[in-house]
Length: 284
Image 1 (cartoon, rainbow, N blue to C red):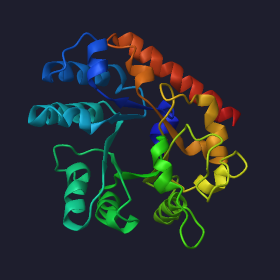
Image 2: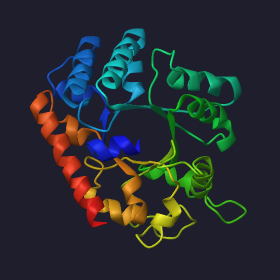
Image 3: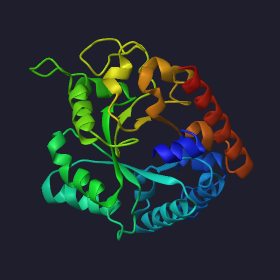
């Protein structure tokens, strides 16, 4: 991940073919429109951004034909040199979690990706099959910690008996997973870029540049959704992440995708966001 961020800039672009966006592109809300959308995004961006993040749900809703489109998009994107982060947010226990892990992190699987998002709210230990397989295959896992949706606070900001928040506990686990990794571990956290001024990982302390670096330093990548349509900007990144800002991979979806289906416009939009992120990180 660090190499991709250094070489191509720290930017992740979503592949989110929801119905409204397909319509805005002049495409039908069908498998043909889905395929055209996915191929266009991959063509435009896979050879220049660090990470592409397909949202699995938007493909799954078309059944097996939609999954086939997703398989092709993943393979083509990886062949072009970008990292693929499958946004599936899987979370379960035992053999079921192991099956989810094999779906996305087994090199022999049709949906083999460089990393997958997972939900730890059946207990961090329930993620062990995915964590172990990622370590064995050299892939990555991004664990939901402090998400950009307001509803997440009722779980993530809850305080445990020992005084630490649930989110802080997840970050502590990831810090342990990444111990001694260099230059960066493969176990990341999802932390919303919209959290400037909101509760921090540690209890209810406001998230500011003075404490964020310590709270969020997990020696691993920090996926930051929320830039663009959700209201955050690249300039907010140092406020949210403090000294950990250089480990941040901001995710932009609608802010880039709304410029399609023109390939040149998609590339220009991604380049603008990447430049804004570099400027913010350097300033921070």
